[in-house]
Length: 144
Length: 101
Image (cartoon, rainbow over all chains, first blue to last red; front, side, top):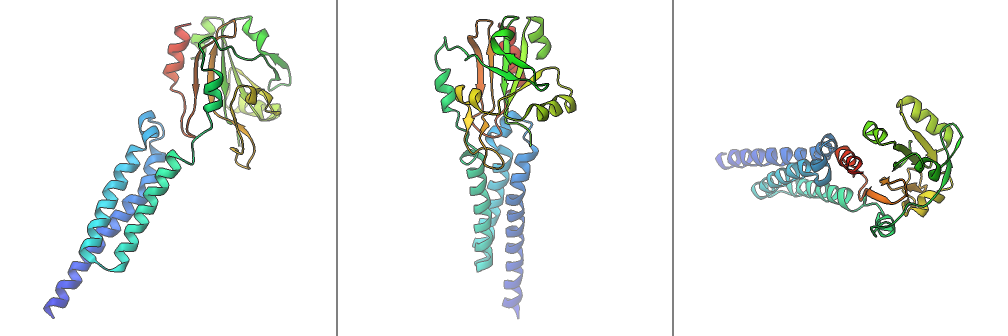
């Protein structure tokens, strides 16, 4: 009787840390999205990775205390979320910026002339606008 | 940013690969005080080395977000290109570049 009670309580405590750990890992992507307005946090994903670290620590603690398969699976899930965040944040969302950097690497690189229609259909030549003064060109990904 | 630029006789030109009609909608809904040019053929985007092939939501080719500040002789005095999808320029950097014109 006594040892049974002892073990079930031990499991329960361990499962609790596993669940909290998993929740922290799942909250990490949300934390990254919520901090996109902060340039440093947006670039580093720090808020998300702090949550992941805490979550993984709890999941590890749960696994070592519990020792059952369920806690190992939960640890695996937490690790998968962390890995996806690393991949998504730093690998999959990398943009091909090398072409631009090469083109404008030299100090005396000049912008190529072009002529394109504006939102009213009126043709706009860069050279014509430059005659009036400096120009800030903004390339953006478009609206969808 | 725009005010600082206009004080120096400057102009903002945005470039997208959408149609002029779509750009008109953006200008009106965001109440933009500058023009958006339409580079549907991607020729200009490519010539600036900014084409992200297959980067669009439906696998289309779209630009990498970038900004260039040009002096009247078309020389590039300041530039920024995003290396990651979430990477955007800090507006205060642009203002500093404009003030240094």
